[in-house]
Length: 113
Image (cartoon, rainbow, N blue to C red):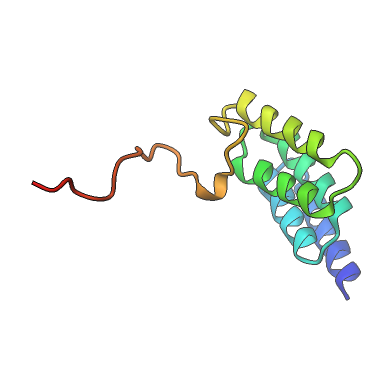
């Protein structure tokens, strides 16, 4: 059952509660079984431990957008602003699934001639 999976994941995470990667992994488990509330708490726990964790901002925004609870748009914008403030993203409107740090933007085609 998915509730058991979330419970086991949380128990394992709490063994190394200081580790943001453990909280991120727990959040991903929760997201996979569609436990939005626990996923949100776990992403926030990861960000408390490492405010520059890009993947946690992306996952948190995705969970909030999927759940579409009242006021979710403002919450997503607030998370995105926090990501920019903590140098995890460059712009609040970006979605990091298409972002690679340090990759220069340039044309992929050659000009004729």
